[in-house]
Length: 234
Image (cartoon, rainbow, N blue to C red; front, top):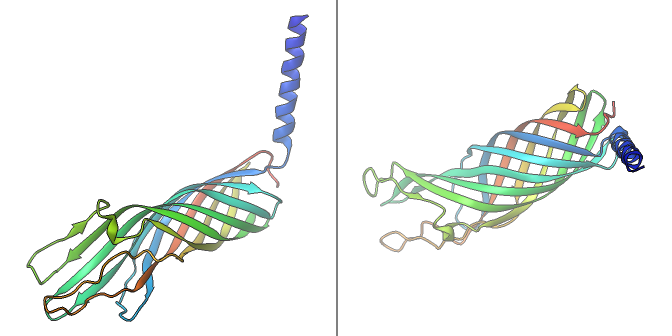
């Protein structure tokens, strides 16, 4: 009798899993990454000429599909951001590169359209935490051949927390079964003032910086691989 109950229980359990995975998929797991162009935008009475530098992005995201065309995406991502700018006064000339490493959690709504080749649009907020920072000064003429590097042990230069809006477009191409590849562009637009630096002065008390605000901005070129858990919608 116990053996029969065990067999019936296993059959019922197998039928449960078969039924569950026979339904249209509700979960998509994606791995994505790619290069970026990253810089600051800022406001204030003194505006430096910020230049974009190359950054990078990688992340694992989980997508819950409400319908075939509408879903919610979130996960954990890493991003290298930064900028390049110059200080040029009568007693200081320096070419600076700033680099910042963030861990982020985006929360985005995705709309998709198509069959084998699907077009998508993402939009939503993101929340980031600064893990490391590095300032590198090149060709500094105040002191010959001096190179300055400031790492994450000096957090006073940059606020740790950042948040903003993320949005992007791209395509998804189904390749086999529940697997797909994707390519697209996403922009991360910071809404939090990340600057936490004092005003710096030259030797004759001329300010070379001011109480401006600076915000992160990155354009990311993404490629990704995703897999649906469950039956394909095709």
